Amino acid sequence: MTKYAIIVPDGAADEPIELFGGKTALEAAETPNMDRITTQGRQGLVRTVPGGMDPGSDVAQMSLLGYDPARYYTGRAPIEAAAQGIKLGASDWVFRCNLVTIADGKMADHSAGHITTEEGASLLRDLQTRITDERLSFHPGVSYRHLLVCRGMDFDVRTYPPHDHIGTAVEKLLPRGKGADMLIELMNLSRQVFADHDVNRVRRDLGENQVSSIWLWGQGKRAHLESFRKRFGICGAAITAVDLVRGLARLVGFDLIEVPGATGLFDTNYQGKAAAAIEALEDHDLVFVHIEAPDEASHGGHAEIKKAAIEEIDKHIVGPVLEVLERFESWRILVLPDHPTPVRHGAHSAEPVPFAMAGTGVTGILHLGFGESNATRSGFRIENGCELMEYFLKSAGR
Image: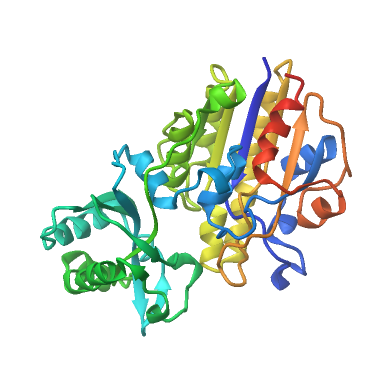
């Protein structure tokens, strides 16, 4: 049986960066293991975000897993609700709830300085006590990422992801449409509750970003995806610190593997993720490893941190996993970002991303190092991102 590994450095693709002499972070990084994949196998471009859809990680990751977002996507928050095991009824809605910092009327930080999980839970518990409508309930998640469930309500509203609008006046980003007034009232209430909260007092004394408000976006109704085993005939496991990817993994029937010290930031436990992936290959056909660090660096405009994160992924995850895979009689590896997150503006882009693929039955194309320019030069391109998974699996000699 063929063994498969997919490694996703979130948001690693980029535009040329002056700091790196016109190279992208991926091209400037020292990535001998990713380069070995492309020199032994092939690289190309894949469009993970269908035309007309916003370039969110939810849409892009769904494509990577082999599911057409145009058919299956109902919103980001329902996917994260699946990660938390929240049951939604047919008439329920769920919103992603960020804890954000607003300064001078502008969106300053989509993560409130990467607030701790404990601090976030404390803020939301106190906010919940001020809400009299029993149909509304907050569900704390990890760090700044939380959920609001609205039972038996109806919405037709446009919302805006805060990480894509850093520096924009919040008045331009407020929800619009049916149900927007209630959402804005909740956000205004949160400002009152948080203004002199103990959490913010401590953060102020420490010189850390304070939590100005909740920010509601990514809404949708309950999601459903056909199981990966039924769709492709193989069983998988996923390793990630991010609820969005956990939710998708749960929806497709992957086993979720917890890794101590996996943070979703640059300080994540890279070695631990690699060790867990290697162990998972013993009793799973496929392992899906997601690393959020490059994307978080991009949103913060930190090119050097993004480059360093890519190098950590190559050294501590791609290298060890590739070494173990090569011991199997039949194997395959795929490395790719889900979407670009250019450091220049810190927002996701819908441009195609480079992918690197090697293993049993893979013929070579353009034996050069991995990066956006070489992937473009290869001439190998997949326009419908949801078709990449089938190509990856079926061309591996199964």
